[in-house]
Length: 312
Ligand SMILES: Cc1cc2nc3c(=O)[nH]c(=O)nc-3n(C[C@H](O)[C@H](O)[C@H](O)COP(=O)(O)O)c2cc1C
Image 1 (cartoon, rainbow, N blue to C red):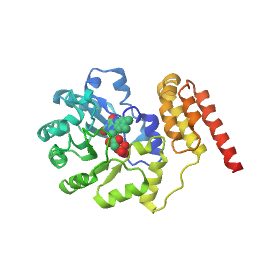
Image 2 (cartoon, protein in one colour):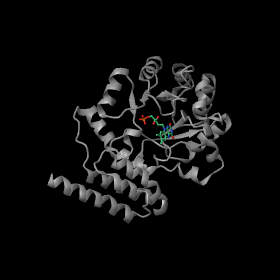
Image 3 (cartoon, protein in one colour):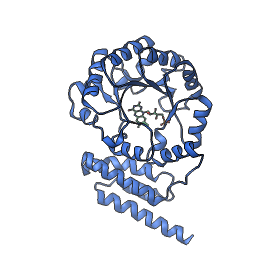
């Protein structure tokens, strides 16, 4: 997830049991122009592996060149191609979800990439452009014919953005019609849902996005449920804030305290989700500019909450 899945969060996801972590999408042109921000996004901590680095682009030459760069210069295990980003800035450049309208282009682009690199190439796609153009099966078959190693399918169209619900029946159709691994994605919000989707649609894995925001326990609890059928308890407020601060410390190591403090505002709000009486702490988060301030704010909240819980 762009703006989220940097090494700070990815390492936490890994430590909480994710089988494969995926990095935020990086522009092919950004890589080729050696844009500092783009190159920093290619950094992989050994402890996160196996890891998938995702690139996006609309033109064959630059996409292949960027894939070659990632292949040679990073320790990622997989090169993933973004074929799902719905944002106009991206689709206007014929990148992201725009490909979904053209299975021939998918074949050509993926085949050229596969030929140019050593690492396995995978694709992350949506089911289609809009409800009149759902080519999920054809598109996944194009990926397979081109030598793609796996495909992850988000069960929404481009036009849906993040509205409506993910259509898992179409993901199931994809699974039935290709022999490469299919990873289903969209709206998996509990361990039981992850298992139900796998059982019902036969997918080889599930990809969990938003449900893990501020909630890496979602990953741990899902893995444990899949492996043993046991539903682990939800974390306490203190456990959540401990991981939130670990996240912040890692983000500070990556980006420095100023940037990390600003970025942590959204993460801290996610870590607080589902906890009681968070109104004032949520407001205060948005003023935080330092680690010390954030730490005090969050643990003052936890202390007060535990006091109230002791009394009641
Ligand atoms: C903030 C945010 C950033 C995202 N960035 C990416 C991205 O860089 N690459 C990608 O393939 N999908 C990206 N996605 C889409 C997710 O990977 C996923 O397909 C979508 O959120 C549906 O899954 P979920 O219901 O489990 O969240 C992003 C989603 C969100 C919410």
